[in-house]
Image 1 (cartoon, each protein chain N blue to C red):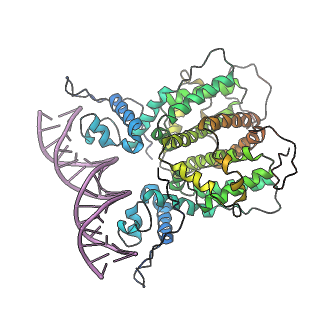
Image 2 (image 1 turned 60 degrees about the horizontal axis):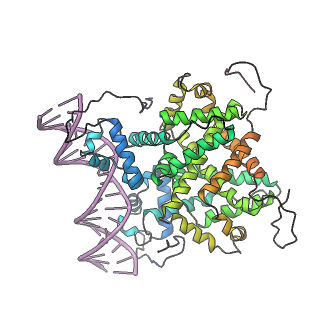
Image 3 (image 1 turned 180 degrees about the horizontal axis):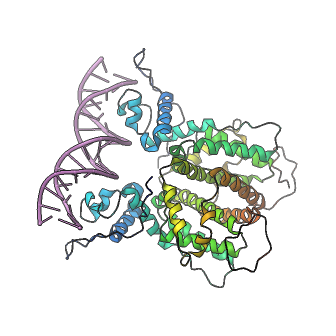
Length: 245
Length: 245
DNA sequence: ACCTGAACACCGTTCAAGT
DNA sequence: ACCTGAACACCGTTCAAGT
């Protein structure tokens, strides 16, 4: 069974379009144009034909640089994740720095509705995804989470943030997929669904960011209290994968 | 500004196709045919044209019963959620019953890749979604979670489960969107990404269900320890949207 | 070798025309 | 009133032909 090629490895294609009339094509300019289109027109607007048109060429030309639409989407997603800040304030405690990384990730995705949706359906294992992953593992280690738990926890964290970003971008996206739900919840009868009726205000209360902040607390306290492996006494080994706490 | 019509309210359309040759059309048979197609062919396969073809008619005909593709997808999702069991074993403690509901929800979505993806991008506020919501609120109340926290917690729970179902269905779906990631993680260099390298096995370990079970523990302990409002002594009143806080 | 227009097999949606 | 074929404006992808 053939394994998918790594879309992030360079491929030997040279553009022959030079001069002032047309800028030379490359993976970079294609991905940049696509990301721009994604931000302006949403996920649906980022079609191969539209990207090609923005670059003054035909859709078929793009196939010299990209396998298919899925690969382009994967590249675009990782490119967008370049905006996630993982540096962090040097002196700050781990919790503040972890929050910073996650908030940055959330903001990058929530910037445009298309991006969050794309992140939900695509698993990008590009350089920027890996950079974020590494940063999160490092911070969890610093927090005293054992490696086995941390490995699963990052998955959980990214899953939750991505989903939250989708909700948030829908919320501010206007096109009322949320207004409809709010309307239904507001008009639910107290006989059939007494608890929904009682909680109708709370169910839709809070900004996306308030919910995000609360969710982060839930996650962190949950993760800190649900180690996959029971805590062990510190070892003397090199890399300090010490259990802590 | 116009608010979206509730797609779950009945609409007055009568089919004129009777007799043995063609079964009469209705919202129900259209949704059933679409769900069947979704399960067999995935989300992409469930096009209006394909659904129409399965019902021996043209795509235009469906527009008498359904506003557009989005509405059909919303109806299909809620219909699928009819399979979620909220009854529960009467005598069991709340945690076991909560787990049962969530596991059932997870299984229904993970059954077919298209369904989980659909749930991720669609907010269905149909009768079955409401039924699940009501059950979860009830169980969280029983667990001692205050109403304000419970209202936000169900959102978090459903978000996480849906995301987990997407991952799970991708995992078993074969078409290697995960094999690629696993490959990248396995070959990541220990210089640039030391923690990813060290955790390369743990990052992809565990079955979808094992991760689900662990995630549930994380959630519950996190939610139980992160009340939005400080814990109060039990009251004697019936139930009321009391001011709180 | 890169680039391209045209073609193929699809979409969702609309609409005038049928019964 | 329901149903329909045809048309419109799109898709992703392939391929033979250009330079």
